[in-house]
Length: 119
Image 1: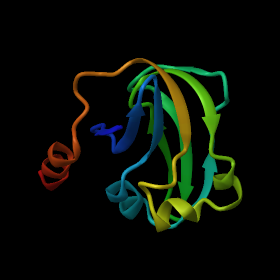
Image 2: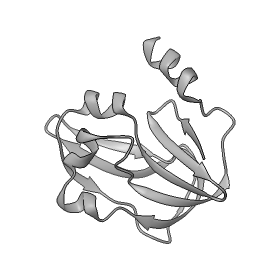
Image 3: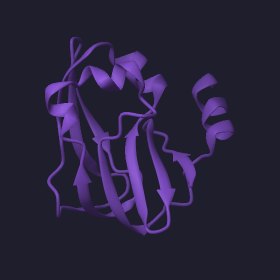
Image 4: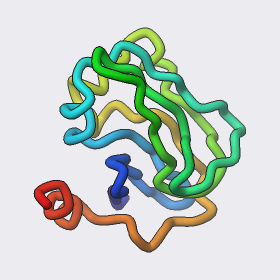
């Protein structure tokens, strides 16, 4: 499994043809306490860089973007009743799984992402 990050702060843990997707720890800290996660629809076709779903924090509603292209094959229903799971462990609290059709070449590994967020 390899974990890649987008410039919009989503991660994709890619294993075979499936990517488990979430937001980075950096992003959840910036958002603050999450109060709602609007999960994507299972079966939806998504394109890398386009809106995947949104999350609501005490600060604002923020769009999340698909880090990879493909079809949503599963969502983490646990987040509907407990969005704070993302605040507790952003790298464990996945939002959805995508059957991958394309992985953009501009995704970063952990080291590249850490450099990116430090500017």
